[in-house]
Amino acid sequence: MYETTQLKEKWSLMFKIVFPILVTQVALYLISFFDILMSSRYGSEDLAGVAIGSSLWIPVYTGLAGILIAITPIVAQLVGAKKKDEVRLIVQQGLLLSLALSIFISIGLFFVLEPILQIMTLEIRVEKIAKSYLLAMIIGIIPLFAYTVLRSYMDALGKTRVTMIITLLSAPINVCFNYVLIFGKFGFPELGGAGAGYASAITYWLVFLITVGIAHKQRPFQQYELFKNWQRVQFSKWKDISTIGIPIGLSIFAETSIFSAVTLMMSTYSTEVISAHQIALNFTSLLYMIPLSISFGATVLIGYEVGAKRFKDAQTYSWLSVSTAILFSFFSACILFFFREQIAGIYTTDETVIQLTVQFFVFAALFQLSDAIQAPVQGALRGYKDVNVTFIMAIISYWVIGLPIGYLLSKFTDFGPFGYWIGLIVGLTAGAITLTYRLIRIQRKKQDAAH
Image (tube, rainbow, N blue to C red; front, side, top):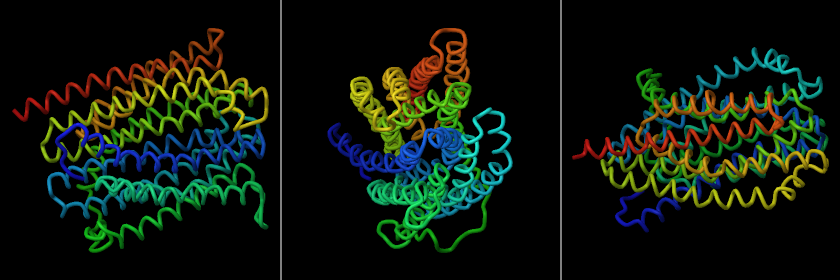
């Protein structure tokens, strides 16, 4: 990365950082996308099972992996402050922390998975598929978390194109293993929805090994010698990472789990409703990759500028990120509204599911603007290492405001399952407003401190 002086230069650098992150996020997302899409082609029960399994998996993974994302602002500020000698130590400790988290969550899922699924009163086959899918995913937790650390480190150095190339390999690898294991090709067992879990786990291992090779041998990563002179566990460094990372992880968990909670609460509806909801959520999540990628880019750029104590530049990057995301949100909303039937037809040929999905897409289009604001604002706040208040705001917006409103509308009005999506819109909007106010306050505080 480098210092910029003109707005055009800033936008150009932001694009260079964000575009590879976007491609990377889409490639990572495509793993779950193809899990659901290819499972839907196998059968509606497999689609529902993978949808439930994915709804449990995504908030757990994103919440805990969010702790490790703290590597990005920490390394970015170290590089901006020209303290490169400390980079290797913080990354090594991040990898050790990722291993500890992986073991913890693997053991936890193994013991609590069956009781959680039994509470949900699912159809027997759907429950069996969801359980098998999640048990298979456990195999890939260790490499997935370790990859998150290495990717955060590479992104913090501004080398987002490298992580883009690595992650682009994941989608075709995952599709190939999905094809083989879901449908039982080339002599492999026909596992249905469970096969998607095994395919994802294998993909995570391969992508991690490729990343390790690049981090060890390629420039500019080679100069940091990440895998030499390993230090024993330093809980002080774990604390540094966790102090920033836990609020980030909890904020991400609060946001992603609200969607999963809605999916789980919809388990009382028919398999067709669950499938339609999951299809709408799955495609909407794909569009969300744009503001999310801008958010990650904002963290890198703002962290670098804050580390160099160029607070005016950090402020410029903040609002440049938000305005760019808002611009793209209008395109996303148009895609969802005008092409909703065609998109639904990609996922399924079941006419009932298609018609339900089309209705969900209308509500999905409405919260594109809120998503476009709150995501880059969160990324900017992480660049400032301001994470604690952000977590509290996320909890209030999504769980105190959004989910209760959705529940009331679904149970006591004619909106039915669509009431939950109205609640999501209200929660996301509340989050966008409160987070923007927080960002303005932090920027003013930094400017005053500089003077």
